[in-house]
Length: 424
Image (cartoon, rainbow, N blue to C red; front, top):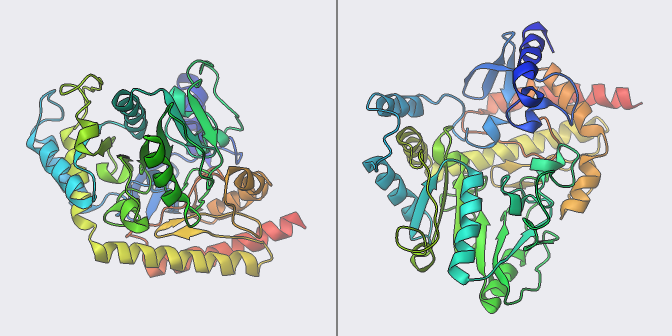
């Protein structure tokens, strides 16, 4: 990495732990020095040295329209001119809540928070309060933010760091957390308050639900009296207008959202049926609150984003992801680099092996085989930025035109050939 990026990283390491504010950004799992983004536009970011990259990180999902979309920027500007935070309710929160409820069938009430972690943490507390039960079932390789109870076997949030757990998380904090293999319906008993799942696992690369898995979870929860929670922080408003519930025809009791609904600003939300949500204070005994919850700038950016995501937009996103997946498959495999690229809608994974994984154990074998870091750097050197970790997904946006995708594929051919030559 060039001089300005190295200088910034050295400065950052003197005042920020590891030089970054989220661990994967430190390039620990791919090696090298991270690039520091100076500006962005559409499908591109420019680093501190002025070098341009075709960006498939897109802030890990919020950039569904592409970076710095003019409609979103205008909405933020107008909102900011009226004030940035009030500690009081605003019409913007009401409008945004109405939009979310209208789009998600079965969701009747929603509360906004400031991050996906807050959303999942609050949903778990609500499930426990509503059912009077302590147990939570999650799936190995699914990442639900960094709340203590959900960090067990936590996918990309910890897997990219080579960790199996997290110091500071006590045995008591996870005593009521049961970890099951993804794509296997667990047996539930009367102690389980909720089953929380990524309907499409996007934190162990990309692993799709096998037929019957989500339906099986719904049936198991119904039989045990447990609540089904969809963590749609990544999939929400990306797979379809109505999210995973619309795409797969399975309706959970609670949803968690983030990323897309903030238009690139810090945001999270959780919601569900009224009979569950009414357990929240001030109506019920489950406390949750936040000074910046429903922030007017985030609400404005989210509203502007959702208004642009009509059915045609989702069709375009899906077509773009398919074009990218097909092109990368030809580029990598054609060079002799065995690759599988699982895709669900506009979400795309990339594993270097011959069979797409169905769970975290299988994903880990492919993610840890040493090829991803080589491909990552070969692409980065040629102007294409993927996430600096093999457990992440690719996020093509509406700004990634056919021309941009074709340029990416052309670069991928060169990068794959260079990696194959290096591997001998």
